[in-house]
Amino acid sequence: MAGHREGLTINEIARLAGVSRSTVSRVLTGHPNVKPQTRKLVEEVIRKSNYRPNPIAQGLVKGSLNMIGLLVGDIRNSFYAELARGVEDVAHKAGYMVVFFNSDYDIDRELFYLQGAQQFGFSGLILMSILDGQELVPVLRNIKCPIVMLNRYMRSFETDVVIVDNFQGAYLATKHLIELGHTHIAHLSGPALSTASQERIAGFKQALQDHGIKCMERDIVEGDLLLESGRQFAERWIAQSNRPTGIFVANDFMALGVIDVFLRKGVKIPDDVSVVGYDDLPYARVAPIDLTTVRQPHYQMGATAMEFLLQRIRGEAEFTQRITFMPELVVRSTTAPPPKDAMQGTTS
Image 1 (cartoon, rainbow, N blue to C red):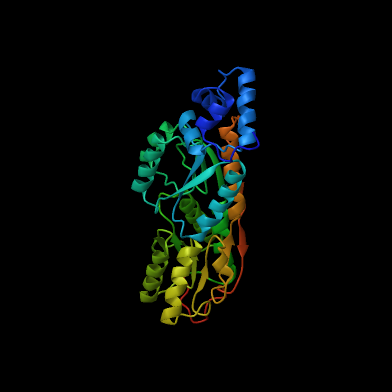
Image 2: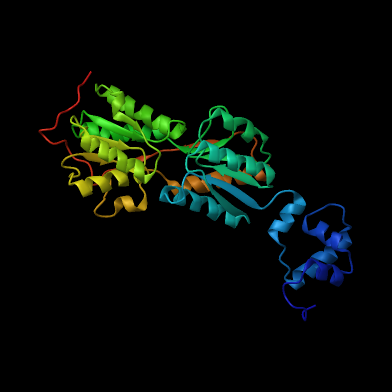
């Protein structure tokens, strides 16, 4: 058969093997209803003809595509890109393709994509931007493929989870500002329905409490993890009379928005105000940003989530798995002691 061209169709494989097209399909999908000698003959023809089956067609026959659905908040945020790269590298090595969906941190969009996932035969789903809303629970429970949550979890839906210790990360960021001498510190958080945001707020509050500083609720402002939220927060800060001298921002993307406005309006960082981000994205270490931030092991988290999912797909996981990575504070140039003439907040 050496003279046959490469890339034969399934019909040509059937003709060369002297069997029906359906027999070839059963061999390709691993169906047990094929005689051993027939299976061996068809596999030999496939090997010598360099036939490469269409993975989508195979998936439709098996009722499960060799595709992984990956729900992200906003792929333009390089935090998600780093996580997604870890997922995709492990998936590719295992023979799976990854399909991305952007939720824009909107629960209606999440519902739309999750309901769509019920209609398609994905091999598995990784949800890295899921909001903790009860309306999502029935939809998630009706999805037949394995689900792993990455950087998020839901209290009322049990599944494998890969997260970072967000409480500890926020505590480290806030403690750093306090140790520099700041007693009036604001926090620009993520969406209220995000478990990651909730835990960062809790870590922020605990650090203040542990150091005898009263937490003022007006100094906790909800953002949406997007650049514009940071810009709006910075404009609000400039308009204040009693300004916080330290700002802990829930992600580097919003921190970039804060810094952008400050630089345009002549606010000096860290002379006038200190800024701490969260994520340690590649641009955070680039001049003139040089952002003090909390580092997460993005790639490793994404790779671990995909490994968990593969174990589920292969039926190798007996128990629900949960791994929590530890964050690390990275001190750079955007934090310093508060200005001496600043109006500091009250202590309890």
